[in-house]
Length: 203
Ligand SMILES: Cc1cc2nc3c(=O)[nH]c(=O)nc-3n(C[C@H](O)[C@H](O)[C@H](O)COP(=O)(O)O)c2cc1C
Image (cartoon, rainbow, N blue to C red):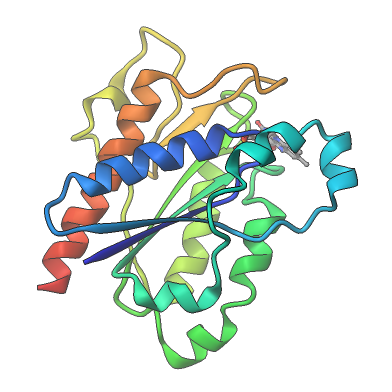
């Protein structure tokens, strides 16, 4: 049973969440977890102007995903930062290259799930995940979120991301806040939850 965690991260927040999602998925016996980045669409010059080169260097060892890898997985968990309340352009471009897979129904019946990040608390985490689900449904995927069985969902004693739609983290306007323990717990929960459902479907 194979779980693919595929993400884009400009400053490293989604990368940290992706590592936690992968750790959670590995908790399900018999699960192989593959971590991949989607291709970058911005030049180094632009990334430099956006102050992202250091973070990009830290992720450079993660292999870049090809669309051909998607049908090889039983479950695919996507991670994206919010861009104006939607997924980032890099992820959109990657998904827009999956038309051939759609035509063949290559992803039909696979489990799909999404996690996200945004700078501000109400800056579009939920809309990013929910609008992402539309693409997964067009591909015929079985959409899985982050149920309230994850108790950290109910926390109000500290600032936290997460919703029933998926794990998420709040980064702060300057990216100064890395994922909290609660948000990482959510990411691990989601990874394990998806892998457990995929294992049942693969039986
Ligand atoms: C073009 C652009 C649009 C963005 N739009 C939003 C937004 O709508 N709401 C928000 O809270 N943050 C927004 N952000 C902040 C990013 O979501 C934030 O930098 C990202 O979640 C950090 O995750 P990463 O380090 O994994 O890239 C935006 C950033 C950029 C560059």
